[in-house]
Length: 116
Length: 113
Image 1 (tube, rainbow over the protein chains, first blue to last red):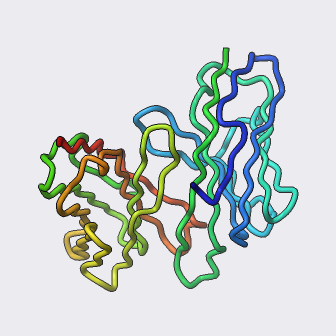
Image 2: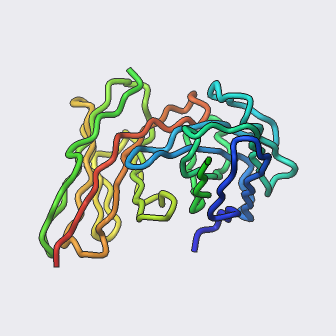
């Protein structure tokens, strides 16, 4: 079992729906990440939060809206998605890089999202 | 310059054999090189990682070999088992990249019984 928990595991939504993906970790990590992964491809970074502040947005379309309500939770709000947004959405967490070298990222098992 | 090139794309090994996956990079600022293992329907799991101040790191049956001058690193899986069948991703990052991981394209490993 992973220490990063993502819900739901599967989500099917229409292009006009609004839904949210949730991620929770209790490892005391203060950096949290959203990735998108297409089949047979590596994860692609979308957003990074550090100390609950958005630090990296990899030019993600505004139909994806991240939120970090506290140090343990990370949400991804979805609205007006396109069929090409169908993918596995992964959350990860790590200690914050304090200039002493990168820290290992721990991934959840993802939410499999299908857009009809 | 941010690319990490991974080979082979797929690999079939007999049980008990050695699986070898190679990665090459261009950016000399990379200073952290993790390997992730991903099973179908699961997220990537950190397998082993190395920093460029060492040439080799071993954890159980898994070994990373690192060649700084050649800008290459590889994963060796000794005594490969059917349970090792998964997709393996190498990755690299720099201390100043804001924790961005640059992933290789992945290797699908199949270990036959």
